[in-house]
Amino acid sequence: MAVFDRSAAPPLMTLKLTAGSFHKLSALLTLAVLILVFSFGNAAFFSVNNGLTVLLQTSVIGLLGIGMTLVIITGGIDLSVGSVLALSGTITGLSIKAGVPVAPAMMLGVLTGAACGAFNGFVITKMRITPFVATLGMMLIARGIALQLTGAAPISRLGETFGILGNGSLFRIVEDTGGIFPKVVFPGIPYPAILLVVVALLAAYLLNRRQTGRHIYATGSNEEAARLSGVLVDRTKIFAYTLSGALAGLAGNVLMSRLVTVQPNEGVMYELDAIAAAVIGGASLMGGVGNISGTMIGAFIIGVLRNGLNMAGVSAFIQQIVIGFIVILAVYVDQIRNRR
Amino acid sequence: MTPHTPSETPLVQMIDIEKHFGGIRAVNGVSLDLYPGEVVGVLGHNGAGKSCLMRILSGAMLPNEGSIRVNGETAEIHNPHDARDLGIETIYQTLALADHLNAPSNLFLGRELKTRLGNLDDHKMMSETVRILKRLNPNFKNLTDPVSSLSGGQRQVIAIARAIYFDVKILIMDEPTAALGPSETAMVGKLIKQLRSEGIGILLVSHDMHDVFELCDRVIVMNKGQNVGSHPIEDVTKDDVLSLIIKGELPHDWVPRSQEKPQ
Image (cartoon, rainbow over all chains, first blue to last red; front, top):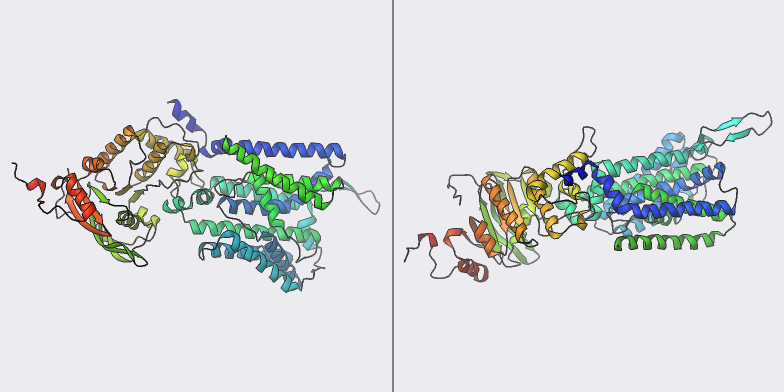
């Protein structure tokens, strides 16, 4: 009966431990080493303020990375998220200019993202276009629409309310000193960081505990097997792309809100950061493998690298080179793990 | 053997099924009956159309012409989901397993058990998997590992378990013993006999004459997309069947073996 005693553990937990733990551990270690190195290099790096800044900066890549992870697990890719982010922000900005209140305007922006994603899913499943080509098309289409609608000019003066999502924070403690500038005791947890945590938890729940999540893994693992098992493969894929688009829309609103300006040129190449985050976190572009916690670690590795290198005065060009090597290294480590 | 009376309603009737790919007629007006508690061997060369016919019944492929009746009623099978709802289960030669998922996830793929809140009930799926695999292979240990790490025989057992766990009435087995060792083959043979005794109809696609004569009540032979013969197993010899497979006809001097006068 010893055989069956093992069954007491929930199967998925155990599955993750055996298959993903090595990779996740090495990624987590990398993150710790990075933080350590940067802390030694600059005392200001390891501070509450800078920690919150990293959290804020990572939230956009993190949100995109979550959607990207879902898509990558199905065996696909979404190259359009950077452009969709810009289009969604543009729609929100134009709606506010047209007199729509901020909250519904942001909702419109997210819906625009979801619509772009649904279109991607439709093209991929019904027209049988490969995900790379379909989302490359959407990358151009969404960017083009955003630039056309705005004439490539930023939309500013959107009001203070528009800036709350990106700049506000929870538990902000301010001491009134009587002077012009009140003393900030604790800067508070930025709303974008809270949003990222909530979305990450929901996505992890979806992937691990819901039928749709199981079908996302099955579709990427063996599409034909999933179809023969009665999984509605097309519907599962459309769902993943729609969610990726919606999250790109959400990320767009966070980003533009932080700038309190809509920039139709924002988000160029963000899709590559999102893909890098997912891949560093252990997702396989072959499909069937990946998880949210890994992608979060990946997003933070990129965020910490950017922030730390910035504070060390390293140029943005060198940063690109470093992140490029990290991506290759992460995939190489993954391959070594699989060969064992 | 379980001979059926003519008045009995067949479990499945495939009537004048046609399937063409461009100009190629893969299945050319084939009809097939399957009765409860009957094991029918579906034989033929590679490319004779037998896999195609099976895929049509299991919903993986749509026919150009023809109809399918299940228990005497016209059935609409547009996808594997529809077929499963009718109690038609298929064990594919490729096994159709998702390699990155573990055994319970594969066994319940597409039909996951859920808790009252609609979450996946992995606990229940695991205990049910343990229960059914105990019946098939008591030595099964790697239930929590991805099925890619399992042996060919173990993967086959999961594919079989998946087909018989649910309320199966019609079982299509495509080369179920091709990847198996002797003891596992014997296990599959035992299982087929047991399922037959439970009144389940089985279509057994096989190249293995020994298996066919050991397990089947009847054989259907396909040749160039046509059904060239349906015979009770006691009426034919291996040579007769080979003649049907290769030439598409019985030897000229053939008479049903069961009616042959002992010499």
